[in-house]
Amino acid sequence: MTSTIAIATIALGVGIAIAWWNLTPTSCPSSDKAWRSFASSRTPNDSSYTFHPHAIVTSDGTALAADVYVPAWWNPARSTPLPTIIHFTRYNRAFKVRWPFTLFFGNQVNTRSRRLVATLIPHGYVVVTIDVRGTGASRGTRPVDFSPREIADYRDVVEWTLAQPWCDGNVGTGGISYDGMVGLHLAAATDRVKAVATEFSPLDIYDDVALPGGVPCIGFARDYRHVTISLETNVPLEGVRMIPWWTHLTRLLFDGVMPMNGIAMDDVRRDHMKNWNSSAVFNEVRYRDDVIADTGLTSDALAVNDSVLERVRSNGAAVYFYAGYFDTASVRGSLRAFDLLGGKTRVTIGPWTHGGRKNSSPFSADSRVCYDFAQDERRFFDYHLKGKDESGFGSEKPIQYFTMGEEKWKSTDRWPPSVVTATKTYYLADHHLLHTESSSDDVAIDVYDVDVRSSSGYVSRWNLVQHVFLESVTYPDRAQQDKALLVYTSRPLSSSIVITGVVRVRVFIEAVDATDLVVFGYLEDVDPHNGTVRYVSEGRLRVSHRCDDSSASACRRSFKRADWRPVSGVEAVEFEMEPVSYRFGVGHAVQLALSGADDDNFELSGFDVPRRWKLYRGGAYDSRIALPVE
Image (cartoon, rainbow, N blue to C red; front, side):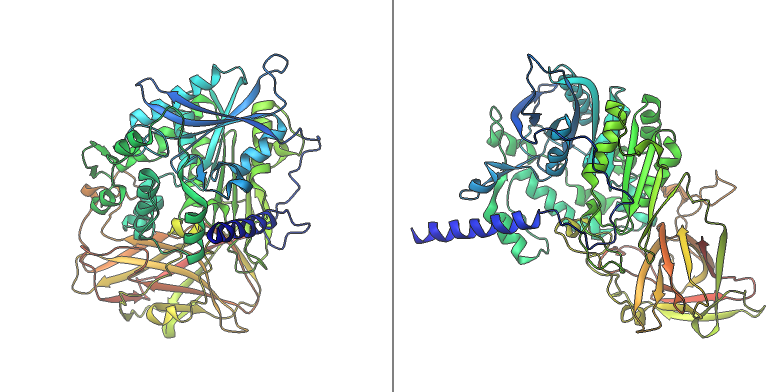
């Protein structure tokens, strides 16, 4: 009896806390509030819905667990059909709730599309959320992500949806991360999808998240595999650093994935035990054309590559990308897709972590996110699925971006924005300074002993699992970290500058007694008032990945085995940092920090990298950093 009372008391406390947290504040303390209200001028309908679980059987006989949310006021005899949003996820469409928390949440909680359901239902949409093959409560196995069979499932579900009485034929899709990638693969596979909203999705798996710059990203792979094992086999999460209260709370609240009537969970577990081990596979992949074990496929098969995007464009789907400055390479990937898709494509870039869970601008008074993604997506779907535009969506420019330091939203028709009219170049100079004029004809050498333990931090832009646990990517004062790095600093700025776009680095380095070389570069802002060193952006490159000879006008790296060659002598190391928009204040200094390691995020074992560099500057060695300036 005592334990029951204790559990009920805890449940009540958790319920009150969650209800308080979900209250909409009258004024938002965070800096990322959108440039306009996204609220509709129409009075929305009742937010209640009827819930319909289904086991959708695909063309190969596999049962997929699906939940259908239909507005409660909709009546098949009297109501007209509605536009429908299909949401596929590999992270459980819903979790089963333990008693007594069922008193507050019901039998299940939708953690992946809850806000979208709450926003779209009152505005006359049906939402269908599905566990993809080999995940959640769905049957089937996963030989690899985005297998041809999985993509065939997407088409099967669309055809099933179109045959339902509540669907009017206008179908949208999308989601966060993997779920957003599914949306793009679906829009490439059929012309029945009219709109895709994809949030914080890494598009090129190789260069955007798994091996950016050709360097294995353990910050992503290490924790991600533990999460997928836990979700796919329906066991508690182990092996991942978590906030203690998060671990206890989730185990207290949830009892694994919500089962589906007609699908036996014992059969589901047996299927899922055969799934591929993504972490083990990517530990073996080093080149873009490496074949993923037992599949015959390369990493490009897992990606939303140019071929996929071209089919999306051909099929006519509108696409809305959301991306964050503190989220892997989602900004870079989204802008690349914008260039390829054109037409009905939109991009919004903010100071966000993965999934838009935190505002990580160092200038924001609060890390909570005030941008209303769900209402903005509702505007997008209204425009493309209903032909309605009540909040000016159609008149807005296709790219909205946030400038940190100004804490201000801006818009543009293209990227880089037309306001970027100059390049400010700094040259590496004596006394570890950055000068705006090139050095003398004399060549100088700076010797750097690589600290293999140096790191940009465990909770970085690369460790997406930590983002899910609501950890802020704060990049604390880097002054201490920079003591182990090779650092060059400008004179204090006489006037503020705003950079927007891609920062380019070109340095000349000799790897001492090594045949490979990995270089990490960080753009930093030095505050003169307190000496604080703020992270702005970063880039990295495994230099032995050579330029693709097929591109004569610019260096494009294929990251294929045939284009790998060992380093020798003095190498011209050229790479781009992740896109950013940032204001350096008056009196602040621009700083470039170079490193040979990022221990918490990138794996260098197996690479013959040097413990010592020689960096050449001056004369023919015009080592420099170029900033795109508004």
